[in-house]
Amino acid sequence: MTWLLTGGAGYIGAHVLRALRADGVDVVVCDDLSTGIRGRVPADVPFIEANVGDVDRILVALREHRVSGVLHLAARKAVPESVDDPALYYRENVVGFERLLAAMRAAGVAAIVHSSSAAVIGSPVQEQVDEDSPTDPQNPYGRTKLICEWMLEDLAAAGELSFVNLRYFNVAGAGAPELGDVGVFNLVPLIFRALDNGIAPEVFGDDYPTRDGSCIRDFVHVSDVSLAHLAAVRQLDGRTGRVARTYNVGRGEGVSVKEVMAAVAAVTGRDFSYAVGPRRSGDPAQVVGVVDRIADELGWRARADLTDMVRSAWQAWQHRATVGDRS
Ligand SMILES: NC(=O)c1ccc[n+]([C@@H]2O[C@H](COP(=O)([O-])OP(=O)(O)OC[C@H]3O[C@@H](n4cnc5c(N)ncnc54)[C@H](O)[C@@H]3O)[C@@H](O)[C@H]2O)c1
Picture 1 (tube, helix red, strand yellow):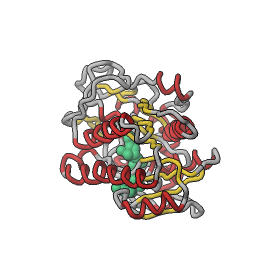
Picture 2 (cartoon, rainbow, N blue to C red; picture 1 turned 45 degrees about the vertical axis):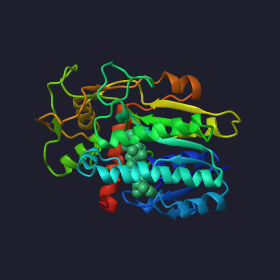
Picture 3 (cartoon, protein in one colour; picture 1 turned 60 degrees about the vertical axis):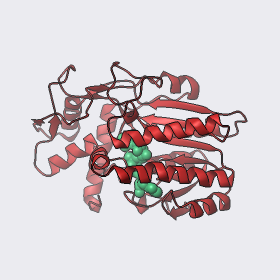
Picture 4 (cartoon, rainbow, N blue to C red; picture 1 turned 180 degrees about the vertical axis):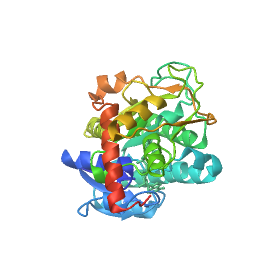
């Protein structure tokens, strides 16, 4: 059993790669290294440096390695960048995805696990959102993810493939010091970067209708997220009937931005104060998932808590400082 993992040189992909290999799944990685790091992929893993839209190269890889399914994580994911350059996001995340699906069709590969995002929900009216909650993405990034979900639903309805959409909430932490998140838009690395630069980390708005006025999100450890992929692969592999399922991947518990700041202070031992800035446009007050469906159907549940996430992220951040900042 071999799976093609797109985006395997990325932050989450590198964890998924390790979770699959640890469980005996053979993996081939495709990544264009636009934001990924080659060193995250072990030397003995077949690596194709290509864009997912490169049908010819993907087709060769699918056939050569007798791939039975695709885990599609490769995507652009920076919300502000998607607002500034939406064409890039539609090209990479939607057109690239359509071409990947075309290569799969040509190779007769009919199973896919797709990285989606809570960004497809937008600004929920409910305290917690389940997989059937209304979708109303607030930015081009979220829209590209929702379009990909729709594409999969329609192709599955036409009998072309089976899919599992994994809608991650806010992914944080690291499974090993060398696998940390170097992204410049995720909250935990943003706080670390500010501390390193000797400036106060910023809370974007503290007048939301939440328990402490700051935004509330559902943070989930990247190692837990990686195991959700393994569960999805197991669900798809060897199934004769069609699978067409969407799952929230979160902890089902809200944590405020100020609570994350406090956890960072406790873990790092640094006594810092944060600055309160204006709200960012499009930031919903609260986004927390209902995570019962994935627990009931795949037996997956997140284990790590906020302290585990911040502690492992901090270790990775310090490791990164010792080997050099490559972000
Ligand atoms: N990090 C989060 O909190 C979060 C939350 C929800 C969803 N997601 C989704 O999870 C996936 C992985 O995110 P991540 O945090 O690991 O990001 P990342 O930027 O670290 O990883 C993305 C990887 O995909 C590669 N890539 C991007 N576009 C490509 C293309 N067209 N062809 C080939 N390779 C390409 C990049 O080089 C990189 O290695 C993305 O689809 C993202 O939208 C992430």
